Structure formats: structure tokens, C-alpha cells
Image (cartoon, rainbow over all chains, first blue to last red; front, top):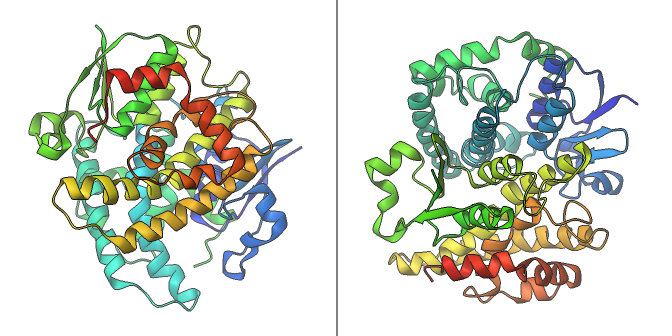
Length: 215
Length: 215
């Protein structure tokens, strides 16, 4: 049974899709329209009790955290496609460490900015300018730390592309594109070179082509 | 060289310590006093650029995300102590999924409550009652989802204790203890039984004995 990814238009599911493309795993997508509240449908909530995206089904297995899902596919298909996990136990630990940095330090402010700048207007909600400013300040501090880190290694976990880098791509695309905050990346030399590198991977072009964002 | 864990008084480092005890791995601890700002010392920031806890050193390897660190030790010592990862690829994926739920849905509100209720007064900061209330509402919704989940399986990832459960212990102890919010656990039958089970593990008693919390 082919892998199914729910909500391909949005950023978090694109982490899973990028991973599947890098690994050469066939999949199909199922649209979920957040703006219509389809994520609150009872049938959807049976798969994903928090009502958020993505949901991914691989046969009888249902996963709904994007980073856990990437790890699962990267491990299941470790002998094919791009190695995204690192080769040694120590490399794997550093990949994990920087995935967790993305999840707990990078994602909260960039998610808040994405919601306020792009989605609040589409939902008819007022923009919270104070929340945007506070999130931008938090994100800037995180990017300063990335600048230092990326001055010492080409990618976040070391000198190899991994899930830790991949995990940043979908929301950073919003930041440099429709959110109009490209300067946050471009003003940091090493972050800028890293972004140019990871966003020019064919897997990302393919993801955007088959799963265009809603805005 | 023995494993070193920095900041044992606090909750996040206790995830790592619990894991090391469950796996029967020897370690030593290095005190870091957040109330004195020792986490902003330049030497500390070289190890942990975000200035937060824990930091863990295993020989030349330095990790600073508690969940990535647990995963590393659980994998490195998979043949000894308690199995905390799951046995099959699918079980491991579910453990990962529920660790990520803890990191992204459970931890943000309980961390905010812990900071506001316990640490703000110790730092001479005013309590933000609105933030406490909003966080409590968010945490209640997460616990409602746990209640449903734990009505179907004994532990979060299935019928086996894992890192997914362990990861919840240190902050939940603050909630039911010094924060005076025990009713949030006790009022939910399955969450309450789960908490009684996981918090009565000898590894947790030993953690509290050797690493008493600062308050």
C-alpha cells in the first residue's frame, strides 16, 4: 500500500514529502484545507487528535509528528536514496540534536510569524504586530547562533546534509518568500550560503512543483 | 571518561539522568545555577549556545537537547538496562512520535507554567497571571488527548514504557508537587493511573535523591 501524506499544501507535511523524495519512496497526497477547518473533522481527529498536520500512513502505521515521520522513513529506507541520518552513532546524535533545535528553538518563532503574517489575514483575523515583532526578535537570536554554527561546519549537524537541515526548508521558504523577510537570511553570510545550498536541492523544487503552497 | 550532565537540579537535565539510570550508565553531574545566570557564562555558551540546560558530554561528544541525548544513550546502550526505544521499526516510530508530542505540545505550556509559578518569584519577576491561565488551558487540552490515548494503551507509544513516557516525568512532578496543580492529573482517570505508574519507577526516586530540585 502506497504511503499517504495528508495536507501537502502546508509547511510541516512538506518535511515528510521532502524526505520521501530524497529517499526515492513513492507516495500519494490527500488535501486537507485548514482554512475550511477540515482538520477539525471527526474523521481527521481520529488520525490526528491535535487537529494539526501532517498525518502520514504507511500501511497500518499512522504517524502525525513530522520529525518522527522523517526519522522513520530515513531509517526504514536507509539503504536507498540520500543518507539523511548520519553514519555513526555520534553523527546520528548530532542530527537528532539539531532536529530538536529546529523543533524547540527555530520553529516556534517562525511558525508564529507565518501564522500572523500569512494565515491570520486569510482567516479574517487581525495581525498581532506585537507577536510578530517578538517572534522576529527570537528568530533573529536563533539565526545568530546558526551563523556561528555554520561558520564551523557546512551543515547543522556536521559536513553532511541531513534531516536537521531538511527540517528547516519549508518554513524558511515562507520567510524568504511571501513573508518578505529575506534580509533575515541574506544578512548572515553563513546562513545565507547554507540556505542557498539546501533550498537548491532538486527534492525541494519537486516538492514545490507537486505540492504548491496555499499562499 | 565518565558521562557528565550539567544542571542536574532542573527538569530538562533530569530526562537525561533518568535515562542514564534506567540504562545503568555511570555518570557525574556538574551544577549550573540558573538563578545566578551561570548559563550565560562564556565558557558555558561555548558548549550550549542557547544558554539553556542540559549539556551532556560523553567523551568528545557534546549534546545539548535533552530528547536527542536520551535517544543517543538509549541506542548506544540498547543491550543493557530497560529497553526504552521499542523493539520494531514501527514501535520506535511511535516512541519518536510521542516524544515529539511531548516536545511540541505538552512541554511549551507546562514549561511556561513552571517558569511563571515557580521561577518568576525566585527571580524577583512579577507572575503573569494571564500567561498562567492560557498555558493551563492549553495543557488541559493536551491532557484530554492523553486521557483518550491512555484509555487505549497503557503507555503513550503502546503497551511498553519508553522514552516517550520518561520524557514527561520531570515537569509533571513540578505540576503535581510545588505548583499545586495535582487536580489536572488526578481528575483524568487514565492519565492519573499512568502518572502513578511512571512516577513510581525506582529510577525516578533515585533521580530525586541524587539531584534534588532547586524548589
